[in-house]
Length: 203
Image 1 (cartoon, rainbow, N blue to C red):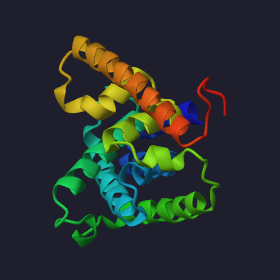
Image 2: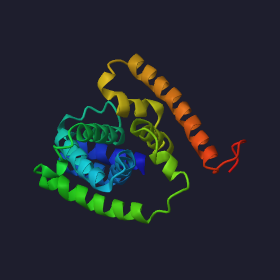
Image 3: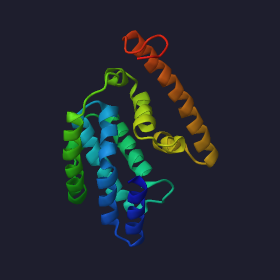
Image 4: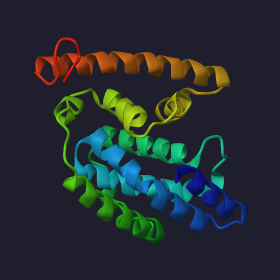
């Protein structure tokens, strides 16, 4: 679905249909981006607000999309930036802004469907351990394990502001990979203490 969606969006961009491309991007990748935000922020209301802002940013930014990454990765980057702004300035809630009607309409449909689905999912026994992680580590875990993004893509999402060259991207990806290994060790230790796995790693 990801490849087909990217191709469909590329075709719409080639045809000059920016609104169609933005709508396709939100419909195709919005559910997983919103799920990422719920995990990152640990609050459905906050995640919904940030998702609306990220969709608006995507809608506004589509004319300037430079194709230096996939649309999917770019959407995650926009969501990550929107979440960071939201956490830094809690008094400037996204809900207080005047939303773009087109973007908000699509975002609202995706948000309603996705949050309903997330509420009915069976939570795994490691959910509490994951939620106890540092937000940055939690984001890293979701992007790699749940979303299966490549390390270079994760580096683009997490470190986009500091990447100027391909070497920067490679080094950032390597640093994140090492950090991920430490996060896995931390999760295993918490799971062992909670009795979810044995000392030998067996559940």
